[in-house]
Length: 164
Length: 111
Image (cartoon, rainbow over the protein chains, first blue to last red):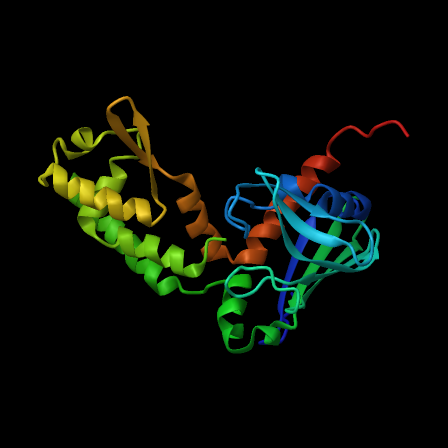
């Protein structure tokens, strides 16, 4: 296991995908709207129906609403199919477009065997969130606030017991 | 974007035992205030009040059918709590992995 040192300005995630890097790259960059959890992770007022990543350095990364509006998330900073993608994430702590924010997301697609890809994602430069860095890091990484949830589960269990 | 604050509101809403009981009565689908209140020891106005809190917490949606107002669980609220637990990138990457693996098992198109 890779135990990465804690970095307050960066979140790292690794996922192993049973697909070739070419397929993983294509799904990630061309079909983002089919898998991105748009019901919850979107910033526009309209219902989001797609995510578009323009396949060129300097291209836009944005969500598309069902009313024709778009909301920019960031830009393409590096486009190296099928191995490396660098994006800027320019969404403020209040989930508004902020072109000045410029946190970075680097995604690497590393071939592992015949039909497997290790996808490494790093969301970094979180210091750009200023005083809200720690709050945002928790959201991107994991809230880790299990205490409250465990308390709730305890209460739910009691409700079930009392229903018998 | 459903923020941590909104998720906390949902968890707070479910922290009340009566409200939790009201929420659980919605699991089997649409229900009117009368149907929810039947068999409970709380009044209909109290049930309405609890539904209002659940609605503003994003856990319940209301649908109007003629003169009836029917309440049901909002799956997005449940999804938001799950996402909040997993974290943004964890949730997003798991969704991506599933999509890429589905794509990978599709028959290859002729070149």
